[in-house]
Image (cartoon, rainbow, N blue to C red; front, side):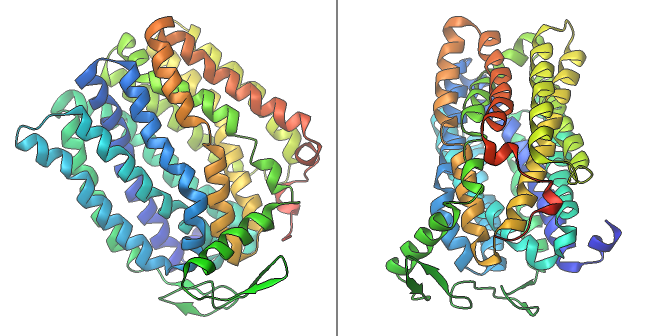
Length: 425
């Protein structure tokens, strides 16, 4: 890690991500709780969750743009636009406009803007660190993501109780501005070179071949569609195509659980309970990320199968234990294998995929993983109103069981070697 932190580009990218993730953690808790506070309905929190997740379906369409646009300008512009959008809520409240509709309009806009950031960061990482450092670098990024969640999810619950959810929107705007300043100092090598360029453009520097056609950068719709098709064609016939199914059904069921989580937490103690549970899940993902950097020498299939069986057991235990701290701990245990798998899959894709395709492939996986999540959240919120929130929370445990069963049933995944043995396709 010390060697990685001496890498200026990596360090700025990492700290920029840490800051923006801290703001996102505050916002995520504030938005869901504000919707629940204004309506008292899990149907509305399900709708808010669906509106948050739906823009992620557009990641595969954003991927060709991420591979084409200058990374630094993209990261800075997105942060500044997000800072402007998130301030709409506190300004509206200042003028007495307190509408759940306005909150629900802001939610998908911020989510859509986020879809540019994470594929860009994922695609940039292999260009600024050595291949043998990728697992550790991904673990550091995951640590930044989950570490911010761990600290700021719990803090958000306390802040909501003290100053209200709207104040957190203002704090989030400040984190976006700070992240933009950090990203302004990131220089990323152009694909296929060792030179550092302030304006990194992939298409035009490297040619892409798909279905017998050579594509160059024309900057028009046809070149965009060619890049999009090239990314999809690349995935076909590789083990990556099977990764598309790992999280689809699981995330749908986990989405249903997240839709009713504010109501579930309200039964256990209100916003502070919500923050504690969110902090517990973040702690599990954080620990899993730390383990991920040490488990890249173990065969992927058996590791995921055994890990997610334990994960499901932890999730169900969280619904049965009698105290809030025990519930948070059990959720943390349940999410450890998820954090580990996230790191390993991210590293696997970065090792398999050539630099020029990484943005598109990462975005395609991102879209596929949440394909049914918005539906799950809508259904979860509605069902929670009729059958009770605990019943819907149990769906998350079955989602974790799905991952273990899916990997066990697919030979291409079950037989994958250790991540550190995987080479570029």
